Amino acid sequence: MRIGELADRAGTTTRTLRYYESLGLLPPAGRAANGYRSYGDEHVRMLAQIRTLQDFGFGLEETRPFVECLRAGHEAGDTCADSLAVYRRKLAELDACVARLRSVRDQVAAQLARAELAAEAAGEPMCELAPPTERTPTP
Image (cartoon, rainbow, N blue to C red; front, side):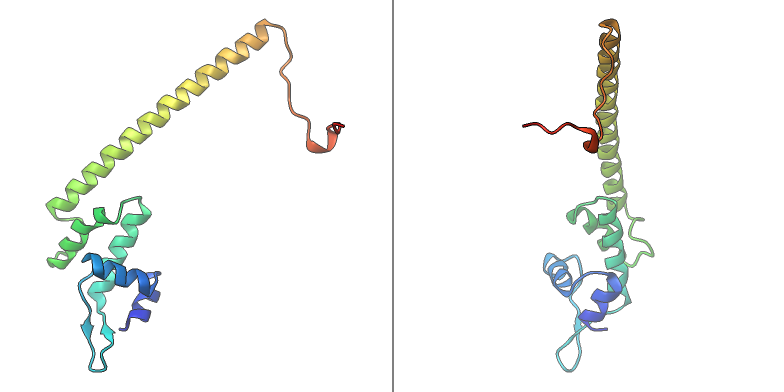
């Protein structure tokens, strides 16, 4: 298949495909007699692997071990030791991010609880913003 067809099947652009080739993520395409690039199903599989990983938040360079695993003839790109190591690193990053978010959430919840108690102790009513149509215009 030609580059435009591959781009359509992969949901990307021809420019992206050329970029991936320049980085060595995609093997160079064969050339047809007329000089056009000719791609095969292995290119589709590699692009699907790259796109899936990027959708999960993996950086482009992080996809390299998965593509190399496919190039080595494995049925799936995540069955090689280097791919598993990338999964482990990414999982550790995600766990750290979740822990940071939990910590921030706990701090915000504690601050809210303190603020509500202070407002209640002061006997001040909780103020709510009026909808925009009920606001009095300021001069």
